[in-house]
Image (cartoon, rainbow, N blue to C red; front, side, top):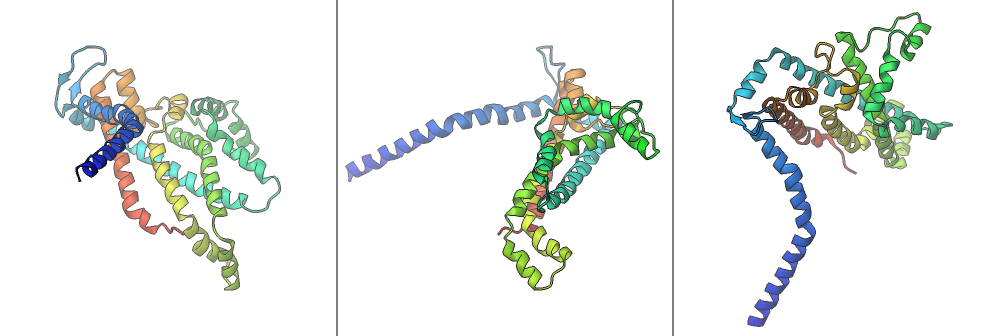
Length: 300
């Protein structure tokens, strides 16, 4: 019995040793690069620090009070929800429409798929610079195209009314290819027998889309909307290169506000507050979506 006890202990010891060797490095990296920055950032939101001085002064919730008392911060929050909501909606709806079209046996559809997906792999900063010239109201490509219809191009990037729509157009153009590819994979995973049975029952094209395609795509749509929200909340490179958060804070979202406070204003406390709020918003949106939206997802 003693020998049996020693054998079990040795076995458990080897299992723990194997677990530590295989999982330990990953857990260590996860803790150092994920959990520790979260904890340290939460600490920074309660101090006053210029990111240069070695002294950090504990100020409690003063940074939170100062930020919410700042009138421009309300504009930042509005811009964040505006940009995120519209860009996720357009990317999902247009991506689904393009995927339905490209799922048909059309000539040249592979080439169109490649063209749609190409912006996804390009740098957001490079795309932003190119679109600055396209939006230019004096000699930009968009101005020439609107001229064909007798319309004039607005000052897209210098007019507060048009700056955010311009940024959203570029963001959607860059990311729609990814949605199309995922939707196409979802469409090709729906069994053909369901469509044939629906046709036999006399279902119209709309009814086949409503009762076969949409339920079949619900897991894909749930995934795209969830990741789309998380990605849009963190969109930075296109905003930085195209507008720098302007004009008059018209495109200043929470992630850009964080950068502005931390790396331009050297105010680590306010940058920490912005990071905490951004993390809280992303966590809240994810939990709400997981709690309520996942119920409508149909898994085959």
